[in-house]
Every structure is written in C-alpha cells, then in structure tokens.
Amino acid sequence: MAAHEGHRAYDAVIVGGGHNGLVAAAYLARAGRSVLLLERLQVTGGAAVSTRPFTGLDARLSRYSYLVSLLPKKIVRDLGLDFRVRARTISSYTPAERAGRPTGLLVGGGQRRTRESFARLTGSDAEYQAWQRFYGLTGRVAARVFPTLTEPLPTRAELRRRVDDEEAWRTLFEEPVGVAIEDRFADDLVRGVVLTDALIGTFADAHDPELRQNRCFLYHVIGGGTGDWDVPVGGMGALTGALVGAARAAGATLATGHEVVRIDTDGTAAEVTYRTADGEGTVAARHVLVNASPRELAALTGVAPPVPAEGAQLKVNMLLTRLPRLRDTSVDPREAFAGTFHIAEGYEQLGAAHAQAAAGHLPAEPPSEIYCHSLTDPTILGPALVERGYQTLTLFGLHTPARLFDRDNDGTRDELLKATVAQLDAHLAEPLADCLATDADGRPCIEAKTPLDLERDLRLPGGNIFHRDLSWPYADDADGADNADSGGSGGRWGVATRHPNVLLCGAGAVRGGGVSGVPGHNAAMAVLETTSG
Image (tube, rainbow, N blue to C red; front, top):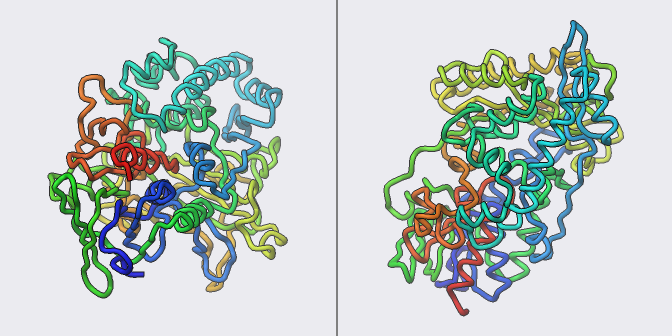
C-alpha cells in the first residue's frame, strides 16, 4: 500500500526493511505505537533473505546472510516468533597435507573424536589442550558479555568489571588477537582456524594495531553466550518472514517500493520524504529509525558522511547433485561439509593473502570457508531434489577488499572464483565442477557476489556486511554522549545520532553487525524510554 494511505503521521517511521527494521517495527507496534516501515526494494528482509537463484530448481538459499549466532532468544520470545535454529553436529573440518599424505582437523562429533583428530594431525595432545583452555576463556567472556547486548550500553569500565577476568580482557580487548594465537598455539593450521573468526568480512592482519580483528573475533565467539553458529531452519528468509508476520500482526504498516530520499527534523518532530513509482510523498513522525548504513543516514539528514567503509569478502552459493569425495578418506564428506570447511586458511596463508591484497593483488591462494546448509536442514530443498541427493554449498571468501574489483568487477570476480575453487579442488578426489547441478537453461548452479555486487544489490557501503568496522560493545568512558552516526558510542542504547528523534537501528549502530536484531531491539527500547505513548 502507499505510505500515505490511512495515516499522515506516525509515532515511528522506520527507514529500511532489513531484519533490524522489522524487529524495531514489531516491538514498537506491540507497545501500541503507530508504525510505518518504508522499504526501497519490492521485498523486505535486506541481506537476511532466501531466494531461488537457479532457474527451474526448487532450492531456497540464504543468498547473503546464512548462519545465526547473535540473535538473542529474548527477541524470539518477546516477539513470539515462529523461528527455529538447528545446531551443527560438526564445528569445522580443515583439510591439510602432512608428509605427503592428505589429512585434516575435525572439530566436533564429541570430545574424544576431536582430541584424536588433534593428536593425529599434530602428533601430541598439546594443541588440543591449548584449544580447550583458549575456548574456555572465550566461553566465560561470552556468558558475561552476550546478555549485555540487549541492555543499556555499558561503559568500558563497567563491561570490564562484568567480564571480571584480567587475562581474558587483555587477550580479547587490548592485545592484537595474533599475540594470543601465537602464544597459545604452535601448529600453523590450528592457528589459522582460530584466526578465521577474526577476519569474517573484516580486512585486517592478525596484528592490526587498530584491533579491528579483535572486534570481529569477539562478536564471533560470544553469540548466544556460547559462540555457537547455528543453521536457520527454512533458511534465513524464515526469520524475516516471521518478523514480517509479527510486525503486521501487531499493527505495523509495511510499505515496499518506497525509497526514502530525505529526513527533515528539528529534534522533536520529523518529516520523511519518500519516492515511489508514482512520485514523491511525505509522512510525519515523532521518531525516525534508520535501518540503513551510517553513510545512508548522513545522506538522508544532510550531514557530512562518515569515513568510507570497505567490504572484503566473496560470497558464493552453489547447488550440487552430490557432495564431492575427499582426498582425506578418514572423514565422511557429510561430516566435513556439515560444519565450517576451511580452505587455504593456515595462519601463514592468511597472512600472505592479506599482504597480497593490501598490495593491490588478488591472493594467490584465496582463503575461504564452506558449509552445507541442507545437511542440517534439508527443508530448503524441494522433495524431488532431496530424494535425488542434491545438496547446497555456501562459500565465504576472505581478504578480497572492494578495491580489488574497482577496475573490472566481472572479470576479477571470475578470476577469483576460479582460483578459489582450485584451492578447494586440491583437497577433493574429484573436481567440484563434476558435482555441480545445472539449471533449467543448462548453466552450472553457482553464483558469486563481490563487495561491489553487494553494494549494488543491497546498498551495503563498499560491500561491507557490517556497514562499517565493528564497534566494541561498550561506550567509551569519556564520551558516552557521542553519536552513532559519527562513529561514537551512540548514547544510552548505542543508537543515538546528533538528532534526538532520529535513531540508527542498522548494523552500523554500536553492537550492530550480523543477523542479531540487537540494533532494532535497542532502538525500539530507546524510543519507548523517551515516550509515554
């Protein structure tokens, strides 16, 4: 429906229909506020959507975002969402070659199997013991930090007291994560597996003095208070579908095909101008919640843009007629691909890939990780595909910053995809190409998205999946009033901007990033705290 039908003014207008905007809409509507959500595209969901990318095949893939860890159960309960996740039985498998023989590291399937895999790869029990100690430390931090994400933003000192572990604080919050990895682990492959969680969508070295890698690592090990990464049943679109249902049932109006082009505000009342296929319109609001990037927020409100963001990942979706056989015959492909399958992610390989990309070149050995959604949740495939043994593969490549694609996005994408698949093929007993399904037009079922593709499709600034560098989950002690749109702490809930009645509820908010709903929840709480209805 058109945004102006029914109401000319709302308690809250939400700009952008990604999952965070939908979370905010559902909370505010359930609290009795009048809510209008305006989405530029013809569908809601943003990056958290399921699509059928391959012509003529009933495979609903999580096209962009694909795993769930940071979504608090509190949000699912509060909003009454019909949404479930399933745990992966295997955490990860990393193929390797030692003494000329194929082998690998399997993490998962029980402590005994994991311990034996470490010993078989490294020759002793030392790395397994170090692994247990290190992830015991991150687990203790997760249990204490994760609950704070849906509370008012703590100061740095308050969060440090909450963690109550000086070794853990120094390891995760103060020293480059490379220090901890090199001090605690000796095996290059084990070191690399640990480091990968610090590099998802983040172009940084293990010893980056700005600690961008530490912030990324922190968010990847605190989810749910455990650090587990689970599979969304029905695909990522099941979450946004449930959120759409919750928001509408509570009375929110969701208008797709409405692109917001300007926000005018005096700090108390706001006017939102939008564009549709039929022309422009305006709507008044007491509060405006922006589920878009800080760059987009700046453009809409007419302020200076923030420092440009840059994404650094390759996302590849595939449909296979069968899983490929592995050179390492000690592991079943159904286990190896059920968790995170690490490719070219040894510690030295990751360092070399970063150095090559920083020098303006594609990595010679592109690092990436793969997992098979359909092994854990076959419901994303139609019954005929399941019966025939089809499987999905999702690949996420690292250290491929947007700048590498500026001159020739299509050509560079093809070159990178070929090199990435070659790294996988080196560990397979048969080429991946032999296992790819073909669509109704006879084309191989594989699609790749570069940072520039994501910027074009979803307006992610520079293709950055977090909208900008991830923030620490605290307010700096000295600047608690800084604004989210200028890179500061974002006020009491981490969502404030320089305009009192305009809030940032997207991934670029403090404690944003990933499929969490946390910025949407926190923006809604900020509105409800300041209004009596």
